[in-house]
Length: 298
Image (tube, rainbow, N blue to C red; front, top):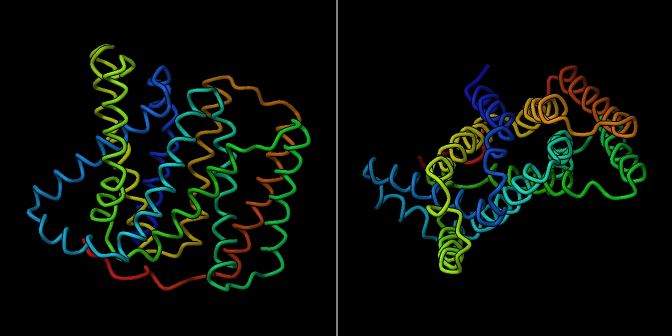
């Protein structure tokens, strides 16, 4: 088991238990919670770079047009993912968030076909068709598209794709992403505070500590994930992703008692069957890709 695989497993274990943490902050509006995640994450990462005395190196590596373009796109994708996720957890849709991450490995495969010209074996096409059928069944069963799941799946799948070929290493990359989002997030929090709607300080010490700690909670799995995608095949990272939604699904059903009726069971069952076939196909063919994309810069 290479380092990339270990990093991916660590990231997905942490992500799996995310609902427990964000449920503690469900009283905070989702946009404010997103802004706090960005604010404290950037400060933590930037202080880390300063502590390592790499500020000048970071600026030289990051302040280039192409680099800013790549990480600007990554920043938008991860912000969409974070906002959707924290809102969904607070609103009691943990089971649907788990569906999004069950679908995500197949989204990674589709991205490889669309953008990298990869060819799929017949069984892989079957798995994608089955997952699509599962989503359609859930759509018709509930009379509404599972938009939370689809937004999470495509935003995180695209984020992983962008990070696969991004030129910076995990520390510099995440610092740049959160740095791009830092000023809008800080401005929004300042506006909320001046309007008397701020969640920081007016509430209680426990809430304040949880908001500050959101930086650590956010950064740790992202660093693991960024390290994983640069050290191992994107398909491997995609397959291991099922660890995350499995834990979230169990938390949603058994800890938070979200509804899981027969219609959901059938729809999820089709997606799960597709994932089992997908993993089996990967194992039988021993699919490997060269490790990493471009070499890391810290």
